[in-house]
Image (tube, rainbow, N blue to C red; front, side):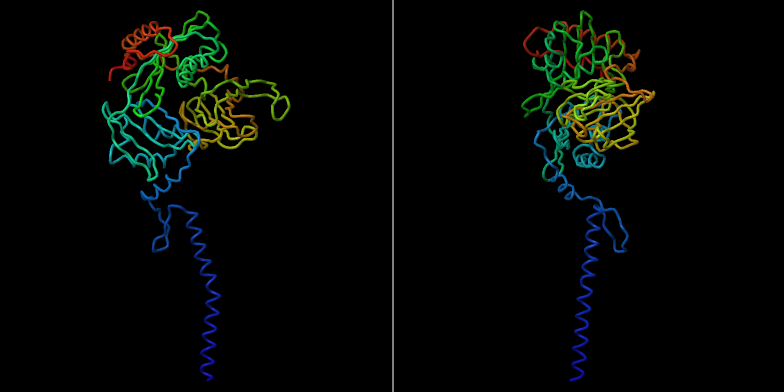
Length: 452
């Protein structure tokens, strides 16, 4: 009997000990589970050491299936590949991170190696207009085939299709009645082309307020038609002309066999500069540079060290020139802001951004035209716009009065080919009819580049 009581006592003690130990064991497991959640992509071996785990196709598919879709639709960006371009650099210039770009490239390897893109071939990227997530990549492999890479619920899939698009060359001639953007868009010229005209001529002509009724404009541009699309996508401006107060400005696109080049005057001198005239496709200048402006929110008079360019929410903001990011993040008043240092003591700043592109960290290098963020209304702002600043040797400069160097002139070895191109462009510009809308031309876009 005594022995039974001793056995029962021992059993009761073991049960009590188990009750006390269970919470500790559960707690330890919970801690390990929480630690695993905090370290995605990491697993532990039998020895307990941490090792990197590669993502499986299934996990990538789940991650892409969770990508948030916006409600503003999509936007296509057609890129003309130049020598030295890589898919990684082109995607990075549009805010796509290195890990994401590698997943898109990996998805194509069984169909076509996307790392082998070539100069003067077309590459079209489709983004969600609101979230700026990449939804598809289309690359013109040759004159007969198109690589199509799309994101869907199962991940990223690639296929090769018969080339489903063609390039149509269109032209339009008109007179200024309200403004360059308003008149061209009203006539049916794509808004992208109107923005490009402002970039091309903006250093020589005040296209925002320096044009007057009766001034003339002529433009020849590409329309890119893709099978299944309701409307074409705007390509490049091939040639353009402005007549302002009787003075004529002409720009012709010319590229060599590597896809390098730009816009040139009939003399062969470059029209384009080392800086973009405007870093965003804007609708109006909502506030100018001023030493004493009444602040609409602070309700006091103070300097306005930049120019405000009104644009729809989410419009891409581009680096004005090559440089290095000096600051990126929240700034009092300006909200989400990116600052870039350029050469010769020049720096630029971009404020009130809705989002900053992932690659825009201090120390990162940027190229002219690279996407650094998206228009928003963060900080002290009354509506979506870009606050754009320029300083030279630490002193603020009015961005609308800022000047910079021109790009190099036509190389001596290409003068003869350029002369042929400019003569054809001049003839086609002069022959543009006065019609209510753009006219389709028989001009081949290949006339605007050196022989391949």
